[in-house]
View 1 (cartoon, rainbow, N blue to C red):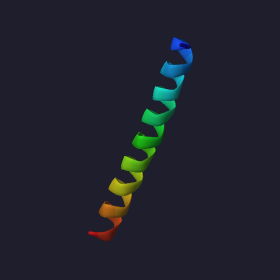
View 2: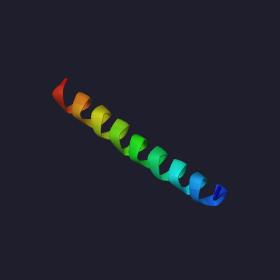
View 3: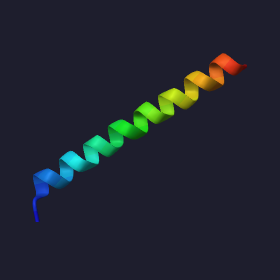
View 4: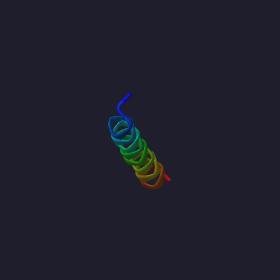
Length: 32
């Protein structure tokens, strides 16, 4: 089991989620 690889995968997924949340927030703000 490659622990470092797993951590990097988690960080990558977390970054994608943050970008998605920021996108949703921006669209919500521009629509209102």
